[in-house]
Structures are given as C-alpha cells and as structure tokens.
Picture 1 (cartoon, rainbow, N blue to C red):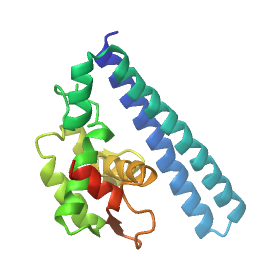
Picture 2 (picture 1 turned 135 degrees about the vertical axis):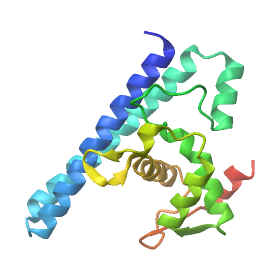
Picture 3 (picture 1 turned 90 degrees about the horizontal axis):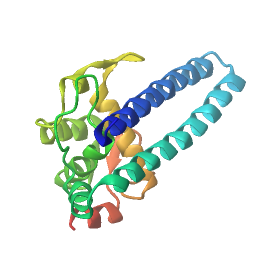
Amino acid sequence: MDRNEVNEAFEILLEEIEQVANGLNEGGVEAFRAGDYNRAKQAIEEATRLAEFREKVRALQKEWGTLLLPKTARRRRITSGQVSGKLRRGLRTPEDVFRQPLLEALVEMGGGGPVGKVLDRVQDKMKGLLNEYDYQPLPSDPRLVRWRNTAHWCRNTLVREGLMKADSPHGVWEISDLGLREVSR
C-alpha cells in the first residue's frame, strides 16, 4: 500500500465517521421532537465523543502526510490548498481543500453571510477541484450533497481553530479576526 492509498483509506474512514455522526444527529433530532430528552442527551454525548474521535483520526492523517513527504513538498501541499492528483472514483475531496476557498469566500462577502450563499461561492471557487463523488447525495440524507457536508465539517474545524466565529447567528457563517489574518498571509 503506497502513501496515496493510505491517505485514501483515511478519507474513507473520515467519511464513514461523518455518516455515523449524521445518523446520530438525525436520531437526536427525532428524540428531541418526540420529547425523549434522555435519548436526545445520549445522542449528543455520543456525537461529542465521535467528533473527538474524528479529530484524532484527522490528526493521524496529517501526521501520516508529514512522515513520507519531502520537506519542500510538505510545505507546498500545506500552503497551496490544492489537491495533488485526481482522486480515485468513490472518494470525496478532502476537507482540508475547503479551508482556503471557504475563508476567501467569507472575506469576499465582507466577513460573512448566509450559509447557502457562502457555500454557493465556495462551490464556484472549487469547480475544478470537486469530483463526481462530491456531487452525490449522502446516503444518510439524500437532500444533502456530499461536498456541502464536507464544507460543514470544514467550518466546524475552522471554528475550533478560531478562524471562524463560533457565536455567529444561526444560519450565518463569519470569519474571525484570526481567520482574516490567515487569509492575508
């Protein structure tokens, strides 16, 4: 198994984790609507543990990328925000590829905007990067296209890193001061 195959395996694992998380979210919403607050609380706790686990897997994936790449390639890969090579069919565009387009879209929109409009702009910026698989609906939610789900996960990561605001109004994404500094580098 070569370096790219291992990275693809990480991507498949992350996608599977996201599908389980989406299922937990749906179950939590159903429990809340049904008034079963104990089950809703349990879903929240499980989703929180799963999100922590997902971050550990992402950290391992990043560490894997630094183990075998030459120093100059590693630096270029991290700063360019572009995918090196076409992904095999069946794999989505990695979450990290969404970082720069998402932050740039927020800057272009004056610092933030409604989620739908931000995602429309991100899609325009990523036209050449998104693959056929990215445009397929999620098995767990046929109304949600895979790349939009990945963009939401990227947003969560950016919020945790302080590059996007955590306290934005519902339905609005905003860049933070730290995020503005990151984009202007």
